[in-house]
Length: 269
Image (cartoon, rainbow, N blue to C red; front, side, top):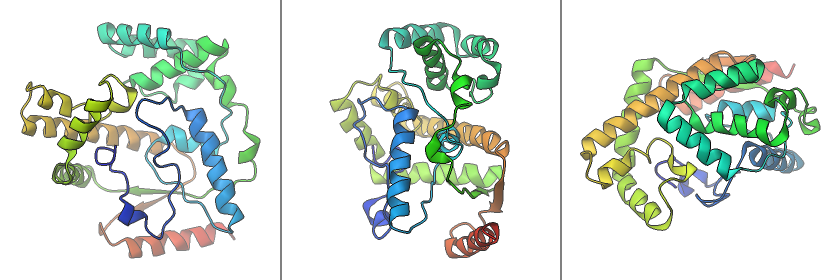
């Protein structure tokens, strides 16, 4: 899953060690708890070299789980429960389950996206597997996080520029061979995998089936990615202690890096 995920290329990774990439196959389970454990392993290894780890990415809950030291319970996937909830979401949509979780665990539900079925199912699964509210675990701290000194940076652009950049990225993904990547993946794995329930993959299936033109499928990728970006923006605006910097002029990364470095140095005093 190289192109649809917009994974950094091997060339981009040269000279800059990247971690937690290419960890599992698309059909292997991978939870937030797995991620947190591996993230702390990487952080410790980087610190041992006298370096500063940079955690870059878009999944707000994953970032928060590491930086704030969420304690995550042992709650292995329950396929029967997941199948039942998936059928319920298919017939009712996500809102009834989301509202039920808000009543069940009002504090924990604040972290949920009402339109993200995977997060809703996992939230409920943790409750069913442990008999405790997910927010109970979040109040427990992972001791590995106690020594972390975290400086958070957020980069922003106007909505119009974000949408334009997303559209450009989809065109780039097409040129790099997104269609052939999806064809290859579905020749090896079933379509109902969680890994494929993301933008840049789910929208290609109707095209492969002849149900949509490629232009229509590309338009869906753009729409869904823009919606995701909007949800990201809402999440991170609520995040505390973020130093916000405008990512303009776009592409002048050395200039931006200098600005971020000055903020970081000041934060260490």
